Image 1 (tube, rainbow, N blue to C red):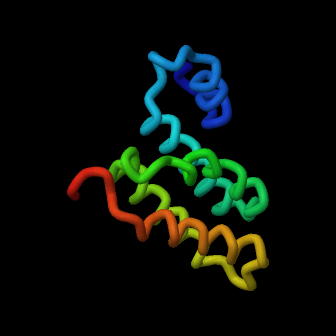
Image 2: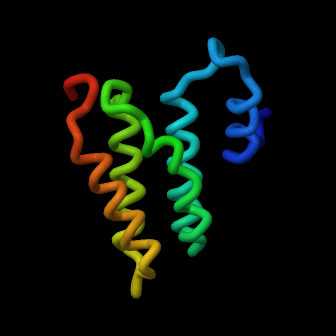
Length: 105
């Protein structure tokens, strides 16, 4: 899949057996998709992409997931005239990133 889209990658993750899945890679792909959607003005679609990642238990919140979510929040903060959904998404990300990481940085 050299030119696979993030959506294609997410479909492949979902189809893989549990033992072959990497929650970190799957979460990173979801978060990257959200950030890309925000950059293209698709904030409503962006809110759906990281939702499963936002449910990652604190014990599994590795540094790469938290920093990717923080980049998404920063991207949201660049939007002019944010909608209520944008503000809620930024708040949810803030809550997610403020919890202690599973591993030290």
